[in-house]
Image (tube, rainbow, N blue to C red; front, side, top):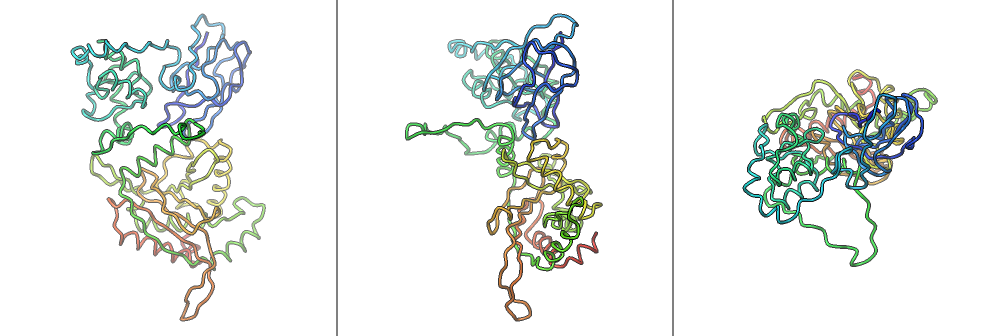
Amino acid sequence: MFEFKLPDLGEGIHEGEVLKWHVQPGDVIEEDAPLVDVETDKAAVTIPSPRGGTVSATTGEVGDVVETGQVIAVIDDGSGAAAAPARPTGRAAEETPVGLPEEEPAPAPAAAAAPARRTETQPNSAVPGRPVPAAPATRRLARELGVDINALAGSGPGGRVQPADVRAAAGGGAPAAPAAKAQATVESPQTRVAADAGAMIPFVDLEPLPDFSLQGPVEVEPLRSIRRKVARKMTTSMVLVPHVAHMDEADVTELEEFRVRMREQRQGRPGGKLTLLSFVIRAVTAGLRAAPAFNASLEPFKEELIYKKYYNIGFAADTGKGLVVPVIKGTDVKSINEISAEIEEKAALAREGRLPVDDMQHGTFTITNVGPLGGTALIPTINYPEVAILGMGRVQEKPVVRDGEIVIRKMLPLTLAFDHRVADGADAARFVGELVRNLSDPNLLLLDT
């Protein structure tokens, strides 16, 4: 028997939601044949079977969440016996390691009588005082049992503290994982901060929501996968980063005439759609070379600015399931045609849920374009740990003054939201001003290319 565990699905991904099983217990499967579709907080992926044989058991119904490293299937490949994994459902899948029996909650009297024994837990010595990774339900359990969760070394994937670790501490046992495992999880400041931001913010006291069903009909939908990732990232960004916005308009009349003319000539060729976004990405790249502060990241614990000498521009894509940010890498060495072709390809993959995880990582600056959906302007949220994001509104014909006369021009609203810790308003004004000049004259973009 072969126990197949959910593999590592990419950087920072610890769990996935079961979307579809391609097999059922008793089915015969070939090696590398589709086994299960899993959606992470970045994309949906099809996981192939690593072995051929008869499927003895599977873990998780559609909609359940399983964690990296947990057994999701047992395949009889003739190699011997193996126990069938447990089948968690709903929220239980997020808290109970697959393949292990779910422990009974500790009785209330034991929690009250355990203070002396809880001091035996071994603290997370990697970064004293920093929150450890744990699900909200696990933290709630720790509070109910009176256990200091930050003193535990987690046994879950990436050192995450599990309910079993909390119960072991409350009952006098040692944590299920050595402290060395926790060491690996606290190396990233982003991981530490995201683990429990509320614990480090003075005066923040989140109260439970009222029971809205008492007032009328409601519908409850679990916050999972991409939508949950967006919620976490946006909360992290808005809590940690002091946002400032600088707004301006670019006269893109000549650029639009050039773009439409070239699009007609390039119909059917790669990148032939030549959307306005491809020109903006090229202009932003030129601007970032002149203003490196907006292509940086701030390391808050070491108090260091990290200037990136490469240019990977992400663009926000609406997938129907939530917002994802495909990244076009090396925009400083790519033509507008090449950038346009990548936008088409990656936007299509994102909508289908097939965009590779690597194509959503390592961005240095993000652009969000709500113009096709309408609206005059927006104030976007920075895609942390980046330090700036550009918002594009809808191009509109407006009366403007040129050489003392009122003329009708096509104007593009632009908003640069930036981290005030790394740049000032004057820096933003110069950056956006240069961007406006480049977009107002297509020849400047061609010279830069």
